[in-house]
Image (cartoon, rainbow, N blue to C red; front, side):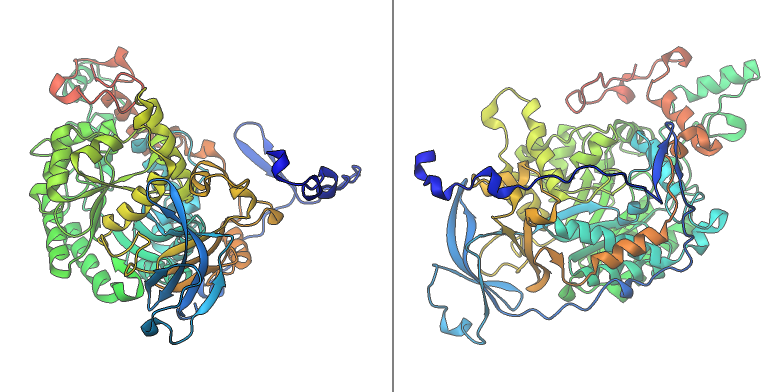
Length: 620
């Protein structure tokens, strides 16, 4: 190998390095340092946040798309090879793929396209972040290790609109919509910088102002946005996120006899014995808000699609699901929801839904069928439910980062694929995965299957995760099957261009596999792996930086918007009476304190697939 390069061409280590400067005494005048295990101290008081900077101050208009000829670019080919080609982006499409240096067809040669030398570039189809929640950016890194059902209670409390939010007890009404827009901007930028050209944002909105701010944010970033206002009609918000203890009635009876308090979510600390009710007024309000969102903001031609997004099958009444399905049919809209993310949700389906199956419940309401139906997580489905998903043509979205972070389990990707179900990729919200880097999710999706079977010939390649799950299947999940997600003539010009000389993609091996399985260098001299990006033929990244967002201004605005640091200890369920009661009932439902159990869990309620986690799944 060494003989292949002349010794004169092999730079000496000395030519790449310089002596380090000797250490000197340095005074840190304003510093933040850990204090014990629970908090922080700072040398100076944080500047209070006075005004919410407008999204417009962070962004600038994107230039219209121009015909662009990518010369001599590297493209993935087949199962593992590469080819060189000239690629023309024109009128929002991939208009031509031809031999290097060849003449363009006459019909495509005018106007003369901008030519870009891509000798050291790799072209890929854009990825789809097919499930996220942008508002979670305000609480990322904050919530302590908790399962989903307890974690979500802390998210509700600690996001800007929560009871521990920016405006205290008035946070829900007084937090400006601009906060929701800024978190969407942050989410869009992070997704874009990891190679995503489309995002499905399942975002909780209070009203049209919230949604309007989100739309403005994604237009500024330039990413293709599928925005799913996340609504429900529970009488008590997210009360139905906590499963019932199977022996709740017996516990309550024993408590009454002993005149004790169980610390549960029911009246006087009792355990709930039936699911929470739905509120017909909220049902009507949710359907009205969805319709208003569609009429004001649905604009597919310009990259904004409104998606109908009930939060779950448990927190949406049958009336709400049927109304949601009707709206989708009326406007030909995509649909999105969470599905059997945890063992607790599988238990809740058996406890609260007429069929005992969340999948069948969605199917019977008509929500599972139709263009671009996607269901996030889908970890705890059985074989019959997978078959029903395939029959409906619905997609599932694999979110390995949050599924591990929240202890939910591992989606059986190969079982879904074998059943004929389309599998896409997502990051989930930035507070349950604590970031929006799709490459992290792809890396995990590539490695996780390797511990599920010793048959290494069935282990997936990184190329499959990138080109199939994140690109081709991602666009199929948002209703664009055959329109985007592949490098082929006629496909949407949603593409990314990667710098093969960046430190992250060196030395020269298999660049696509290295992109997924490797890591990216943060030092400025290391080069930016993602050089350029086009969405709908519009250039949205150039030289590694977003074209429509000033990152230095965004950093300042985010720092000022939430100036004080907080502690993960603030998110322990014990810090609130309401969340403490949720924890009590959750632990009882999931058999975590068997010494307090009064009756065994019936087998029809407590038996689950055994291959989704590494512990015993049966509730006894």
